[in-house]
Length: 242
Image 1 (cartoon, rainbow, N blue to C red):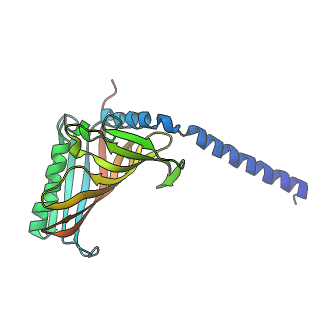
Image 2 (cartoon, helix red, strand yellow):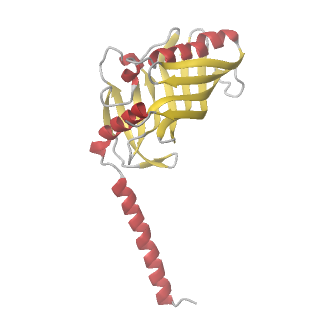
Image 3 (cartoon, rainbow, N blue to C red):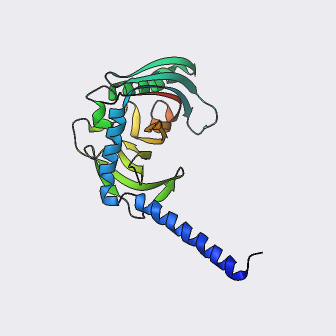
């Protein structure tokens, strides 16, 4: 049996260790002033580090207030190559042919255009494309990770229609993207108001990759439309070290 004095010493030691680990965690966090540079470095490491990848994407489209029954669905195998961008193989699709053609296929066409070499750089979440301000409040937990919240506004550039006005959450230690939410600058045909977007990321083989996305729009033709995308089965080929 431990004496009361020994028990107090043990509890004190546990508390000290806990404080020590907390201090280490905070010490590993980047300061707010260095976060934009950390974000740029993390994006560059991802772009430079990946030669190619494949991923299976499942698109689900909902209309109006029905968020249970899909109006259209599509499963796609996406292939990314650093030298050429993205290509798509539709594995399956169901539901409204009109919605698939005018909404889901249009999303693929838009993604294909954005990811062309020489174009995709203009859509990166970096300080060259955005004015980034770390919001007050310190670090918060997002998806189990310590994150800074970044207010981002697109810089006026020729291809700024590919950018988003909103909020970015990044890993406090690495600057790696964890989550993004906002309104797209680009206006879509038949869409009233700005397209609202949300995307989650996770670390896959050392690189931040999307795992879930959601886009919501309103149009004269289709009313309220919500498209969700689930990403799975990443197969990443890193670039050879030089």
